[in-house]
Image (cartoon, rainbow, N blue to C red; front, side, top):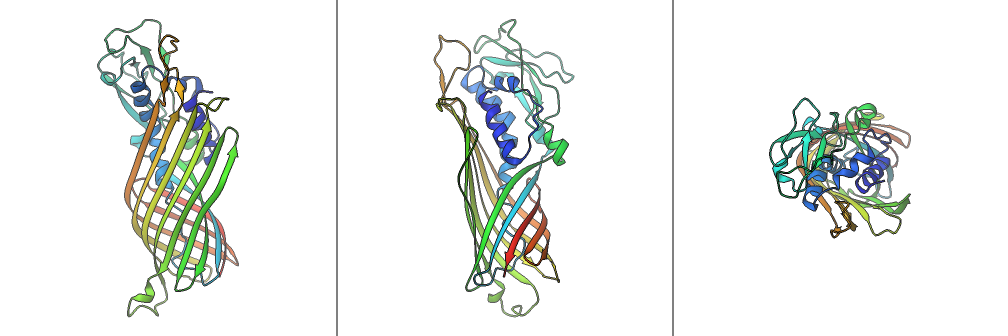
Length: 348
């Protein structure tokens, strides 16, 4: 399996999206031509996935504004389902920006393009249009190399078919109550092996009851808190048996928000407002032969991509608590709007 396909497959397995409709053989063509070509095409194809994953990492930190009492604990698992925007289903390839390959035809109603000019939209990983056709050319020229046609990658329909056009981002928390209305939240896993890869996560947050400091509302029957949180997930995948080629995916997020909630029997409606920032990166490391020519040197670390999502956020949700079992769902309006659902165990 080629490098980009292997990294994406690992991410999709982690998110629970198993069916890939794109051709792994065609996806290999992202890493073809010059290093600049490889980065340009990989960025267009993969960046939407990085942005949606980044948007989901700040989800699932709370389902009530009431901190635990001293010694109280909870363990909560959530799935953040990030909406795929229409604009992230395709990207524009400009042939004037390609050195050793060029977009020959989008295969989506347009005609053939010239090697050094013209542009066309082709699918990202979320796209549902036909695979485009590329062709090699003499580097930095307008001269195509006949007989070198190859297909570009298609998108995958798994997100549309199974998840209503959303990307799942799994998150979990453990919380413990401290004095003075403080609750500490933790996200952590040791390094876990899966096939040729590893995954680990670390995160922490602090929730604090701020209603106690506001005169005139201390005794009113609702809860009001503020929270700051940070989390980071790292995934590494070996791309060859020797381990000399590797893909590294990292996503981290920070959020600051104020929350309000009101317990009514077993129900707790809650809401929050705040601000979040998140960054996702993908690096393909090692030496790669991008042009299948043994006479030319290999390219070291051909792809390094990074996407940042910064957005205000407004959340509304509902929690149901049955004895110590909690079930919650909320919707966050932000740059990449997100539905989050989860289960947990909560005491005190």
